[in-house]
Length: 189
Image 1 (tube, rainbow, N blue to C red):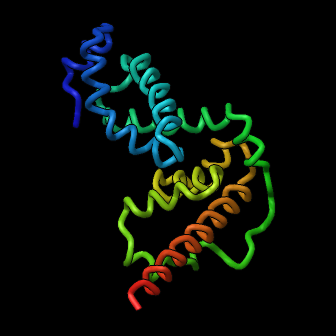
Image 2 (image 1 turned 135 degrees about the vertical axis):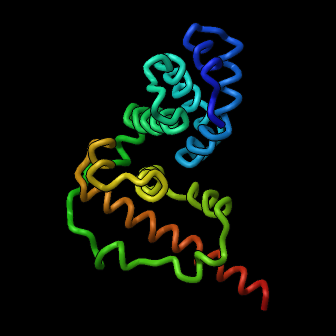
């Protein structure tokens, strides 16, 4: 899915047809990122459009040595974080909390049998049932690979808050998945 140098140069020169072709090429990939952070398609499309505008505005600064896909992904994730910061509702639900984690470390927690009974689409759908701060931290930590210090800096709260939201997300996701598995077992009896 690497865009050709000709396509990028045409985008740099402001050619609308080339910009549209780049949008069509990267829409599925960027939308898959946006939808992980937003419960509905409308919000995901909104943030994707903002990110794509930034991509087109800064396409001339993208270094040829680096992967265009990775560069676009970073812009998408950073745009999502910026939009979350702007959202007043989000700010109130992300109130900073700084305390030690309860009940041991997160590394002790495993998906065990739940992991064997689900697919990625099902899991992403169930992640949408999580509250926004939990879902955001879970995405950044588990899927995007950021550590708690980086997440705390991006979202503007203490490291303990990032750990707390991740712990809460994992517990709630485990509860949701356990309920689904128990329901499936009951239906099979």
